[in-house]
Image (cartoon, rainbow, N blue to C red; front, top):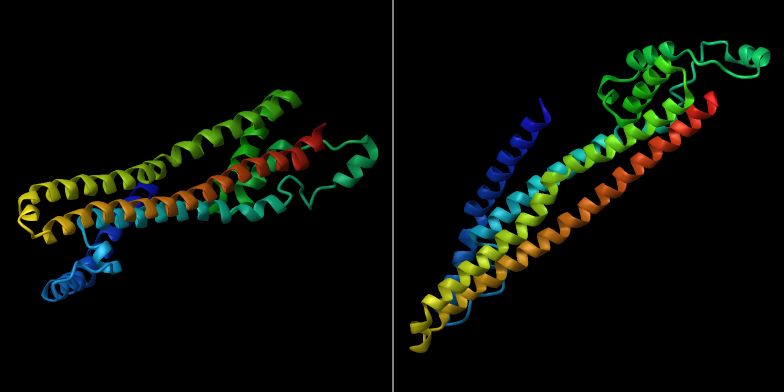
Length: 262
């Protein structure tokens, strides 16, 4: 299944799960608490189900679940290939490199053999990892030019491309982090509009409708901002891991590849 289909499926699942929770528990429970408060001539309780009962909060929770899936998927892609950075993918344990170093004083890399080993010995789900892609691209460049500077330039260009790719893949996560507070502000505008439409009742002494509408206005913003803060924390942790991945790839190429050629 492609990443796009997985993302779309995660959105559908998020909609179903959150909506079932709302129609099965949150809204009935909130309506019961509000009715009980009205019977006792009290204001609406500040219960959690009352705070999150409106449609804007439901949409925010749906987007939060979807955003968590997107961030977790990126976490998984980084963590599943992290072990490669502790493995020497360039060294061939079956080759006679020690004898060659003893005679020539340096080691000649068999680039084609290394690329073949990368293609055949690396697990298939790790072939798209930045480290393997950088090594393959750089070694192909070196095999065609036999120039160390070109190899170094290829590594740098691959790392720059990796940074651009990671930034583009994070676009939807950034959009969700921006969209969630915006949806909360929509609830604020809707609540204030409802409150103003009930100004006549408030002047007549019935302020219950106005207070409920103002509750919608402030609750939607509160929930949206809290969710946005939570997603922003997860997103910054993801960016830290992505930056670390770029640095680790550069360090790996310096340690295991460039030092063998220079």
